[in-house]
Image 1 (cartoon, each protein chain N blue to C red):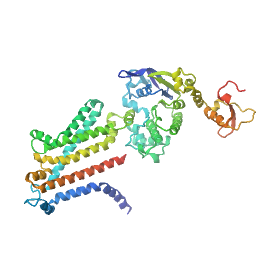
Image 2: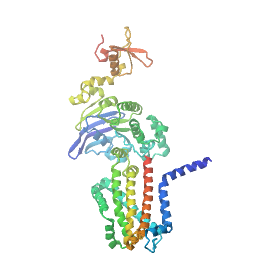
Image 3: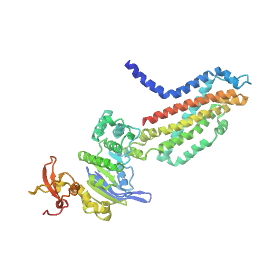
Image 4: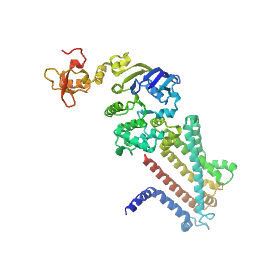
Length: 314
Length: 255
């Protein structure tokens, strides 16, 4: 668990972070969002003390981060940055094994852990272990970056725009992988991004920052439905907010039991998002869809009225 | 049969890499030991003189002392230069960065002859003044390149090294110096090569090295002596420079 109490950071006369309080629960993925210069990266770095806070208290598992030895603290916290920061003169395997070696794990244990992580991140050992960072694609390099951060099995992961430099397709696949990974590992993750779609797709909780202060925090749905002011509303996409909401909800949540009416031709999977269902309707010029399961068996139906959340279907 | 092909492979690879420097070294040694064999050539160049091969010392000890002076001065320059550049890039020493950079570039503008003239009254005649002059003269390329190498490291690499929990010493030895090594080595190469040539000036203050035939030749108007010293110094510089070039290539091939 991470807790910030009235934390302020000043650089000279500038106040980068202004008395913010924030609690991040164990196993939660919390996204800090906001425009550039709003203090989100500074906030992140005060957690592993790459930046020392000026006032207030930063707690980690109930202890102030100032009480930890800097290096001990950082070796307990995974850290992923946009430029990956892989060491160009080290192989992939050596890069991943960095923190375990710093912690003086026995060699065999380091090797086993590196192998385990490469498998976990979809980097086949025989293909990648001996490669150097410049031989990797952007997506592969950031996978190595994530593997390196996870190497010593830290409870906490700090990610500073980890996928910001990747092309949209690679970014999306890494986002999916991170979500998948998180559902298995249950790390406490603090994630900085200015990509709203990324934040909405990944975060359990969003923290919107502006000029060093927290403007609003809550689940993605709460923020989309109830932005506290125009700034949050426009950050979340203005009138696009409705569409963004459809990406957070699943067809299964809105579908109805099969009716005696003729089943429509157009179909959509139960686990698809409402946005995907909407796309199918638009493409097929249909206002009713059959909802199917993995075996392509119809399990329900979804009308446009239900999809948009109107109280009653006729 | 298998064994021999295995053991031969790395040997031939090493030969391919070190062929250039070894050829220059061979030429240098051959000329050092067999200068007398070229007597007819030098007699043709310098027909008026009775003596055409430098008579006061064998060339091998001259070469040895030349190398020793350059090696001592360069080692000191490397230690001092790298240490100074590292020190002023640490948070504690950053205030001295402009001063050191300035001092190092002044070292280069200062003519080595002037350093010699200033050093002789303090250190006396012989080998020490030339070592001091070479040391000062060789510092600049090393300091400048070490500074450039250290500051050329991607900020993300340094940030993640810190963020992963590496100590200052671990960052320096495992990340900064290895990454700056190719640039530092280029500076050492320049420094050593220039010093091989400059060391000849030592002969003017009584150091006996490959500069001695040159000075003696100038004083006595004997072109053959000058040529003998210059040839050997040139070959030495080429041999050392090509060895450095190979080292640089090996270092770059690594990453």
